[in-house]
Amino acid sequence: MKIDVKDSKGDSAFNFSVDLGAPPTVVRPDSGDGKPVTLDWDRAMDDQKYLRHCLVCGCSDMYVHKAFPQVTGFALIILAAVIASVLFGFGQILLALIALGVVLVIDLAIYLFAPRILTCYRCGSDYRSIKIRPGQPKWDAALAERYKAQRMIERGRR
Ligand SMILES: [Zn+2]
Image (cartoon, rainbow, N blue to C red; front, side):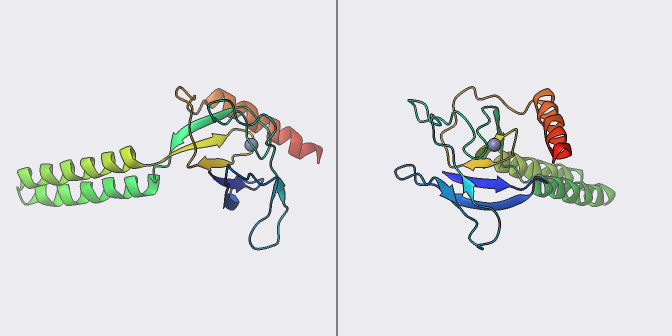
């Protein structure tokens, strides 16, 4: 299992691999600076070895998503549009359609082979190389909004 811990702004703070045979209780960033993170293993795994709650913050609301590099997908579409319009301009309609088709297939392949990630709503930690429960909910805007509001309140208190 690989865990990517986020800072309060949601940026990646540090990441590490966890050996489930010998799970660590405290992890530190490799660089040595930054706060150590205590992992909460208490009832974290169910009988089928699915993660029940976030190890970093204990939150049980998590969502599954694809690690699809959105910038790559977007750049490919722009590139395809440019190539296709140039080919259209030269009257090469068949070639233009082939170019669009190829990009579509590449985009689809990236999407299909992109690894699935489990992410915590509360602290934003990402879990990769992990067994994901069938039927694990996808991102829910209402739930995400609720956690965002909660974070604002918590930040205001500090
Ligand atoms: Zn969390």
